[in-house]
Length: 229
Image (cartoon, rainbow, N blue to C red; front, top):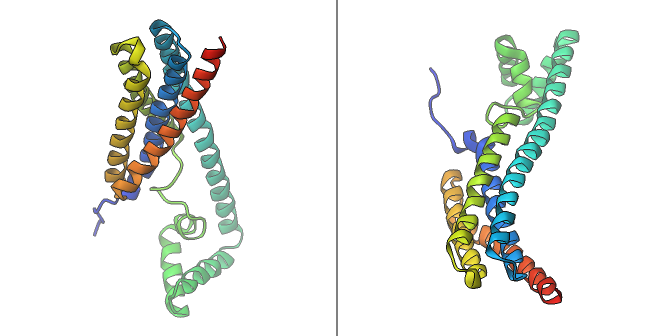
């Protein structure tokens, strides 16, 4: 009988990358815009800075996610290749190893041995990958998926403060960008918590706190250098 129940862990690959990208898109772009605006730059300069930040940030997120997740995928492939070689060289030792894993999880020795034998007969490498190495379909590295999800969500997140900067008056740009970005971060926290089954208020608090801290820091730097200029 095929198992058809879906769990939230199946989303973990793209959800982590999407939340990271959207959060970084909002926070880094809004912080940069707030800092430049606080330095008394013109609205055109602020917008040009924001567009450059969107493009560079999206490309950076895609490259960073692809390289980092690919390194995880390479490690997984290396471990699987090693495990495959060990299964071919000494299958009895690998069977004993699998039996010990199941016995350590609470099965009796006889039952653990039966389970290990049946799973080995069905898919030996899959059993060792899952139960010895901790590699499963839900958590396996997917570099391209992570790169695309992160880049796209970064661009969407960056568009929000950039759009505000284009629509509001220059003299109140800092307040508008900061306020709109904090609301966007709060909304992101709600969406991420709902998608992952986490506590909504804790998620909202985390993203808004760090976003506010980042914007406050860059606004301070902008005012310092703006005053000096």
